[in-house]
Image 1 (cartoon, rainbow, N blue to C red):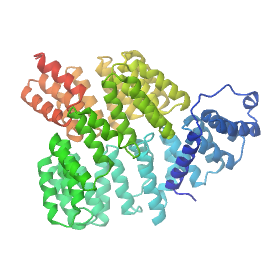
Image 2: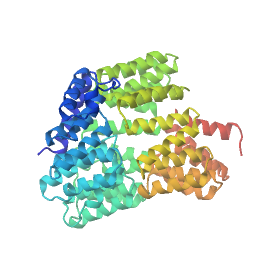
Image 3: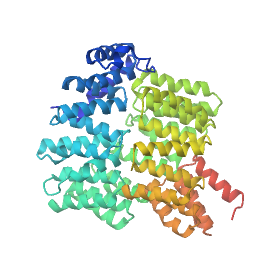
Length: 563
């Protein structure tokens, strides 16, 4: 029986083989045999479509064939539809497979995963419950692998995974490593109280559990409990000195106490910790604090000693770009073309080219990535649309996303991108309608609830409804900084300045996002706390000097003398 990791690997391999064959054309008009839903004929046309590189037709014909076919056919149909990222077809095929083989663990895994992609949480919960409740070392390993795969999947994510999996855990029978994994999932899903509960369950079985102490330290840091976080971090280090050597420094970083984190890392030079790991963390600290000269010196030294990863070169490219040395930045980004950072590097290089007025060359750079990595077609479409929007042509990104949705129907990230592009293009009513349409298909999705609520609030529309939507989102993810920011923003829009401040302060404490800093600073400014507002903005600008929303807010309120 295949493990989740093996299933993912198989799906990835199939995706590569299908897309490499050129699965990127829109579906042609179907022949008459398909409309008759004849299983044999549909299977033949599906395979023929694969050979031609028509991924969508292959997925849809296989799904239709599976409705009247065998378990093996339903399995094949599910695999093809997933590889083609045709989620409606994958849902049709996976339901058929799961119906025919309800005890097949692989069928349950695929069915549950597709259900979560479409935000059908109850169906996913039902499919995953027997897997989560299974006991024994192998079951624990497989469930932890499932958690990691779902939370890392860009089309699923931690919050839906948490909603589908957590309720099935029995704390009395679950192994401590599994409880710790669920605690990490709760943390990623922005439910800090649930994460703390899992940490305490782990520590109840072993007070010196390093995984439990690490989890507790992270929760307390995110809750703003600095003494508690540091105490738990030090206990974790004592419990496992080699495995948790950086725990105290990491917690100090999470708390925003960067100078103390730097001192802690320097202290570790006298220990057995690898010097290269210390130097990489010190370089990153300098970058995050806005000390680009020191960050450049440290990252360059790592490269000179052959101790840096591709991420170091990406940071050097970013430092060069932020310092105005665009030619050096482009050179650094080009060196990453064959690494895991390739798309990020090309996206940033494309931004520079577009800034220089070379929009066609910028888009070609992204297109060339897709030709080399066809499995990244969705990411490339979004990158191209964002590139155009960032340069004042959000409307130009809409056809790109529309074409991608023809290839990948109901792809959640593409649908979300379309709704946000409409807003950026000034088509606010259409954006609201798009988000409302998505919510009808994904009722209760907290990201969509928040997006719709924020869009309404940002444009002074239906503020009462906007706040209700945002509060519903927060009921699912009570500590999500984006949603706390939205709540603070809508309260500010409604004139309740005093109530907006705690939510915005808390949101920024959790994430240090520059747009949240812009909102928090604006609330402080309007409340008369202008010195504090300037302090918030200055710190955020030091970390994120290129943030346009932040710069626009500062200019609007400070440079214009707005009171």
